[in-house]
Picture 1: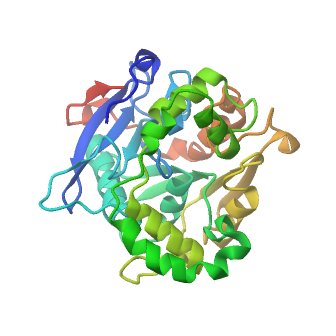
Picture 2: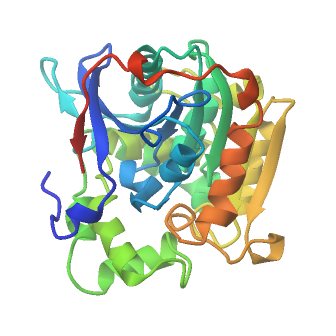
Length: 356
């Protein structure tokens, strides 16, 4: 998918590392290493973007990104782009399946293994935004998780029932009819819509993803041009079912809901006071169900000591996030870093190419 090249020169220049999933998808990890001149400190960090999002949802430009803040603390950062993203390629026969089940069962485990193999690290840390945060919970509480030291989620819903409100009870039959149809759609053209000139994309983004004054117009335009991926029909079908039933069930009937109670790793759960998409109460719902004995719930906003309120997307994009948001994350992941052996750069064994 062709992206707008107008401001590509100022985007974060990630290093691109392809890897394969067990079911035939070639995916990519986008690496942001620590500054040259020393070994990485602590565990490498794997980041999981949210629905219809890619690596640029974690920051667009050098100097104002969560990856950059972690790099400054010596952390080696790797961002997964899921199947269905513009960077993914189906290498199998027939049609490649894209849905939440396969992202959870194939994409995340393969990415975690790849990061450990590329770095030689015994364990990783995990950061997830929005749906990526819920994925982090389900992965950590699942049976096949790679060793994870600590985790952070931002704006991660504990469920999807709030998106339907009082109409949830009325949608069961429509969901049963629409879900099979939605699975047949490869996408809905969201990137093209986001890149449409004029005020409409900005107004839509301001309503759901940004808080007034959270970022400047140029940053919002860059986010629309570069950070938005399409919404696969398979993803939409499962999210509708999760919202209608209140349970996080796979297509084969496997119920993921109770995995949150099986999470044992230390987890920092962050909510944004100005988030109009995933409100703090929805984030807290996931937090309360986590089984971890070491967990913290943090609301970022003016009434909670931050310099400003943040929306769903600008919590990772605002200049002020460097102090209000990134610093608590760096501190949380580094709480036990003295006990973690530095990882030598020489352990990164596969060549990486630089991309925007």
